Amino acid sequence: MDEVGRSMALRVEASPWNGETLEPIEARQLRVRHELWQQGIKLGRRVERVHAGLAVGTPGLAGLFAIVGHDDEESFEVRLAHRFVDGVLVDYTVVVASPKRYPLDFMRASRALEIAVATTKVRTKEESEHAA
Image (cartoon, rainbow, N blue to C red):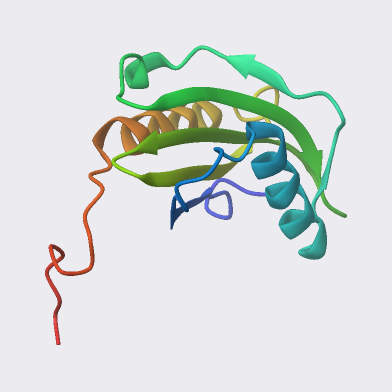
């Protein structure tokens, strides 16, 4: 992969809490793992909790996690973050360049996740602005 071809993918998924027991983080991670597998991304078994960096102290943050992953071409890292805020479950997934091969890209993507977690505002559809 050349300098221009590298990029990251960040996904933020929010779902309303049904008012019952909170879904365990492991179940949320298993769902993400399955979705990535369907896209050809295989993840290692070990899930490691990582320092939250700029996201430390973010309301409702359950943690940031890292999993080694690979597709047919390259190895990389997948970072996950989970929050529960204002009755909404928020899951963040970022595919990060290999920290050994592309340390700057890895640092940029990791920081982008921390910023996304720290700055995401949860609003209802009615509160959101629409460009209709």
